Image 1: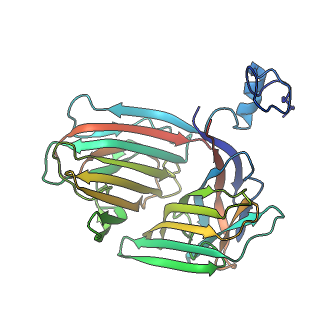
Image 2: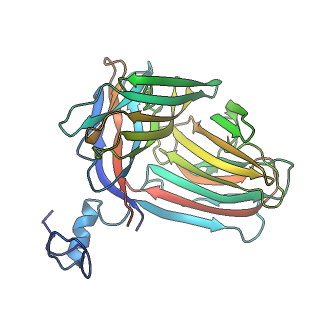
Image 3: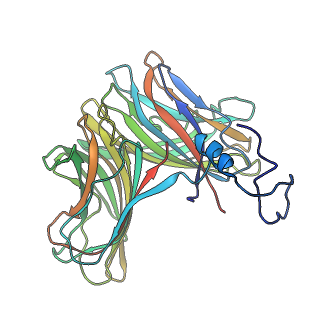
Length: 175
Length: 213
């Protein structure tokens, strides 16, 4: 039996933002979240950001420190940095575009349920957009000891919809 | 699902069990848990191959791309017999046909022990180049993991991200991470791993996993 234990899946269909709730608990300290097959309804590609949700259902919109690298096959790699930001950073869940172009991400999230620790995360993934490609790798922290129970992604431009894909959350078991 | 907390839990006894149960899974219990994807772990080994004789490429052609939309490769202890510097690369099979044209797109960053770095990017690669070149001397080796997405989805491009580390001599190390894509809406049903600069694998231990949906 592998140590990765499935918790919940959230399908994405015609929405500017997606929450996957009640996934972090006292059962695990470390979680893996995958985002796959995610495309938008617009050929004007847009950044997708990530945030966390606390146990009262409130999406946390402040106190994120982040460091990301944004890579493109046609350009140099650049850094995206932020302190006390409103999310894990611009494009922290990659960029979306019209099918067949899509994004795919894997996130690891640490201590979300703990009230004696901040919630840490690191992520990596890629996407195809505007006929080209994109690489994203980052680390971040939500500087809050609030109990975190869910995850949220949203389009930067709310006029565009996330049309397809899935979010899946797994817990990392230690026994 | 019917509450089975009176049946399975810890056996033979729990240090701090809050409910008294037998700790035994019946066939029905397993069936119920399988239906909610909560029996067994979510990382499933699909295929593996370890070095026995030198090989110029390693193909995995039964990757169950219809079952998984996230695959994970673990490449451990990789080395080659030729090339002053060589690196592992990936090519993908689309409906059984190997794609070796200049269509792969790559963005990769390499970090070195001496506080230097470089980027490697391309829109016309003939393969996915996973690691910065490294020598082939004894004890020099590479280990990496690769996530691959959307392989079995004929309506999406295939995407991967990867991260690896390599030793060079006894005092040097290199780190590479990046992302690549095959920007073609196709069904990828196989993966080839091979030495970019030619020659053969002389050491390898490769596992292919699927992450359960």
